[in-house]
Image (tube, rainbow, N blue to C red; front, top):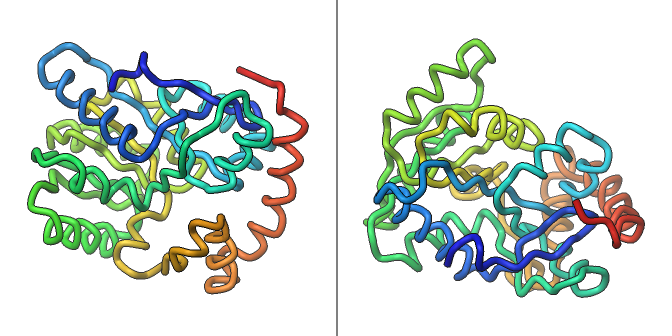
Amino acid sequence: MDLSDVDFSYVAGIKTACLSRTQLVSLFVEHIIAFRSGKHTQPLTVFDTNGHGISLAHQDGQFYNALKHADVIHADGQSVVSFSRWFGNKVIPERSATTDTIHDIPVQYNGEVSHFLLGGTQAVVEGCAAILANTYPNFKIAGTQHGYFSVDEEQAVIEQINRSQADVLWVGLGKPKEQLFVIRNKHKFKIPVVITCGGCYNYITGDYARAPKLMQNMGFEWLHRALTEPRKFLWRYLTTNPHAIYCVIKHRNVRY
């Protein structure tokens, strides 16, 4: 699948890809193959959207502008899929949570893909890399780097990433820092695919727990997070969920 084949739905004014999990992986793989052959020279930048992201985008103009420069924004939250059905111009077929996508690539594509994991503490990112490499023989680790680097160290980190010759760069710095980092340095990356992934590494290491499948399917993973880690997530969801709904309704006819 090529980027020109992708349909988009506007959810709260955010241009969101109408892609299944399988189609999303296909898009990544095709871009990697094309990049390796020299057909593409720019990375495919992939962001995600969920209730928290929608709320943040309509509070933070810099973050909202960063979203406009992404090549693909996929529905990380089940709420975004539901919003597309109720208020969108097109329906998003299913949720593509980043915590699933990182597994979908080695499961759905048999070829070897190399990955660079950026973000989190060094212990978490290295632990995540070890788990993925041990679980999937075709998940090659090109490198890891914790997310606690300064602005002065940013260029050195980018050079480290480029030297790794990874196919996919995962950026887990949290919203909006990770999106701003990617857009600010997009022209510097010599990597086929760049994907923002928030706290994905912590779910793989088991530091954060995924909700039961039923809650995920019903769109209540946020509730599970809020109840299991109230200090980190409860206030966020109590404030951002209602605001996200308001933004979806208010901006239902907005298209950037």
